[in-house]
Length: 259
Image (cartoon, rainbow, N blue to C red; front, side, top):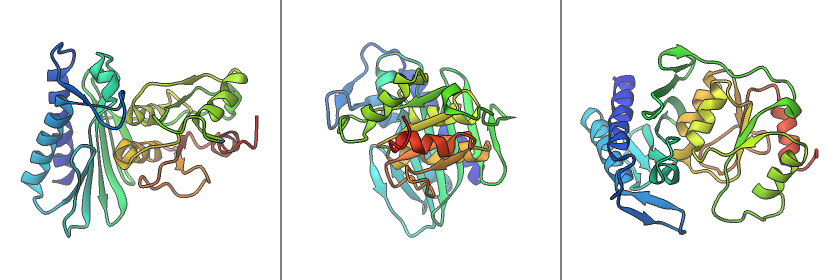
């Protein structure tokens, strides 16, 4: 029932994403900054997702990007990003998705990320592996950062902080290491899980950005930590996800110990 509800909720939200994609009269507003966007599709997607979950589990705790924390006494928490990659979505760039993670007693037990525009549905259940469109996926085998293909994202604030996003980015690109920016953390994580990228790091994420994706990486054989190399919690901002083989070296690069 939990898995069925997760899949149904993800697909319901994705149907809204697909419906509104490339609409020229899409209603768009700003949150904290001019490029921190929210659209009518975000709100519509979030509503149908919550409706699906509430119909099956009316007492479950829900945390969403747009509506915030909707707590209950339940040990289950659904962590929802109705459209991850909203700037891409608003500009007609098909790198955006619905992301939903399910937590039980503080442990992520299930996650789904669906980009209906690319027809890619990623899913993982704790201890049971990760899949893309029902087929098992696994992280890459690259063993050195120098030969890796990386991906990152940039926050809207504190770009120039000491050892911040720009400083880390500069270290990699000055050594000729390819670092991409897709604009969707959930997709970044899933593409690490699928072996397309060898590592992903970001300095400022919210729980809904990574809740599903980090479990998908782990279940695909990868490693996810904070920037200290400690156990990853989606309730703190720093994330490093890799194939595991380059993880320790990536931590050195990110923390300025290697350049």
